Amino acid sequence: MRVLIVGGGSAGWITAANLQASLNGQGRGPVTLTLLEDPETPRIGVGEATIPTMRDMLHRFGLSEAEFLRACDGTFKHGIRFDDWSAPGSSYFHPFQRHLGPRWSGAVAEWLMSDRDTPFADLVSVQPHLIRQGLGPRTADAADFGGDIPYAYHMDAEMFADTLAQHCVSRGVRHIEGRVAEVLRDGADHVHTVVLNDGRRLQADLYVDCTGFRAVLSSGVTGAGWIDQSGHLLCDRAVTFRVPMDAAKPFAPQPFTRARALSAGWCWDIGLRSRRGRGYVYSSAHISAQAAEEELCADEGGRRAEYDMRHIKFHVGRLAEPWSGNVVAIGLSAGFLEPLESTGLYLADYAARVLAQMFPPDVTAATNSALARRHNQLVGEVHDEILDFIVAHYAVAARRDTPFWQDATDPARHTERLAHLLELWQLRPPSFADFSHRFPPFGHVNYEFVLMGSGWGPAGLVSGNRPAPQMAASVAHAKRIARDLPRHGALLQSLVGKLN
Image (cartoon, rainbow, N blue to C red; front, top):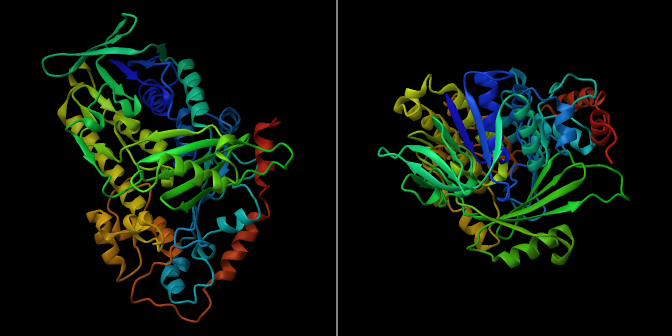
């Protein structure tokens, strides 16, 4: 069986690594994997922040944690801090760890009935306490991807793609460079040849489109099969730049992602070992590109001339059938959601894992509609569940001070499923029973942090004058864990060696 992955970058190499590990193991196997990469096409470079599933991904690929951190300028991540989403000066934290068990089952309702002076995340998670102390999520001598609390990473996405490329090639994936000039199809609209601009002709039994927004092999955002979801999420642009670390200051990258609300969207601040990544995700209907640059620079405290700006246009939505015929779209060519909860790499990895599960048993099944239908169903469900969760951040945000925030928080933006959930949660807090999908990256616990952090709550559970419950237990738990944890910078130095 021959597979041609068209497009490198994170999505292409994640797909190659998944198929190699699942179908061939550590060397050559029954599936011939070739990845075609155009060296002249710049990578989008999205995915500098991740979610805890990244640890499982690296483990499946056979990469060591120290190797990954060293090669990708990586740091650790406890979660996301949302600043100014409810009002200027407001802040809440979405951590990866949540106290569970019977003792904490009623924490949401108890907190809602309290005076709410204690932030909800402080009550039910150790990670806000660890962040305030600048601590990492694990000890230096813990096993790879180990530790007592879940965590993720910040990293350079282009370095990550290069690291995966070296890893995949060492295990038998063929890597060739070239630009696609023409895609030839048969009478059934199945691809049979990819022609390069130097005349080379590449053929395979199954093709994977990882060419990003260009969608060279698939229909993309202009095709009839595109599901437009821009009515739910208004942001359609991003401007980004990089800020080198100040060598004169102590090395102390923040172990969390910062997402601050601005006038027409929100900006991120992500600390790597050698630099910080800054970006503004905004609505072009509410602010110009130049004004977005100026607002992001003001947040950084600098002037536009100091930074090398990069602009990205995107369309929110997905293909109804990312697997169509003998072509499977993965990554940006299959769909896009704004990077608010760092799910870009997760979606590419999930789609590649589903493809490995649905992989045709022989050449004749490469266009099997049953396999394609199940793949499309699973990938579409997860994309739409993440859409619901991202829209929820706007739905419960109390900010209304600009036209963007008035438009973005309009209930008309809600998905049908989210509107139903919010209706349920007016009667009682989020529950495990509210989510039926087997593979959601976000469940009721994640919604708890966003809803409670934003100041939202069921109408029937009003604030009281009692202190928040169980705070002493949460602080004691945090102190026990913190005793053994090193500072974030010291942990990185222990794992990757000399940093400069």
